[in-house]
Amino acid sequence: MAVLVTGGAGYIGSHMVCELTDRGEETHVVDDLSTGFRWAVAPKARLTVGDIADEALVGALIDKHRIDAIIHFAGSIVVPDSITDPLGYYLNNTVRSRALLATAIRHKVRHFIFSSTAAVYGIPAMSPVYEDTPLAPISPYGSSKMMTEIMLRDTAAAHKLGYAALRYFNVAGADPEGRTGQSTPRATHLIKVAAQAALGQRPHLEIFGTDYGTPDGTCIRDYIHVSDLVRAHSAALDHLRKGGENLTVNCGYGRGYSVREVIAAVKKASGKDFKVKEAGRRDGDPPELVAGNRRILKAIKWRPRYDNLDFIVETALEWERRLAKHQAA
Image (cartoon, rainbow, N blue to C red; front, side, top):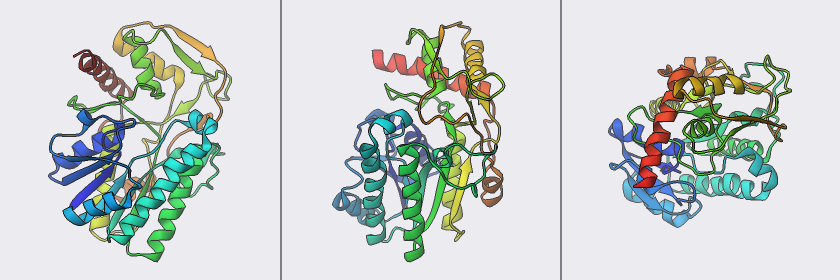
């Protein structure tokens, strides 16, 4: 058996590849390197540079290496960009996922794990938000992911395919061993941007919206360490391989921090009082998104290891230091 990771040269995907190779899985990666990096792929994995919608390419890999599971990360993830380029997001996130699913079915892949998002909930009426909350995405990004969830559900009902759709909340931090981290130049993740500001790589940090109905007026998010997130994928894969039922689960810690609280944590960890500017709200940003995580805790053998904002921030800062040295080399 072997595992195919799409987008395995990117942020979360590269952590997944480390997780899989650490546990002895034969691991193959397909990535077009549009936002990922060849050097981010763990040495024990095999990288094929290409398009996940290339059915001949992906099908040949599945057959040659007897791949029984696909973990699908490849896609576009910036909410504001999806609002200005909706067709690009539907092409990259939905149409290409449809092609990947078709290839998986044609070549008899048994398990499929999908990188979904809390953006499928839109602006939920309650917090925390649970998996049975009606889906009401407010951005093309969220809609593109919701469409893929629907395709996956319907495909699994018609064919012998087990699946798990993992709805991420705010992924942050970096590999505690320093092997990989968030490396995309235009990344919009708050903790990464704040770390860059603390290290002098940005002149300032912007807070988008200070008039939300939250205790300090800024958005609240549930930040999950990337290493805990990829361990959830491993647990989901084990669950499916043992014949477990299909899953749709939230991935988060069940508590949130405001933008101002995150900035304070980064200033504390770095010892730097960097400049912060206030700006207007961005389209597509709900005031609060916190995971109701009872289902994932019950359904699969997953327990967080790094449920600590200070630790998440420390690993993010350390990665930015390493990345700066790597880029300067």
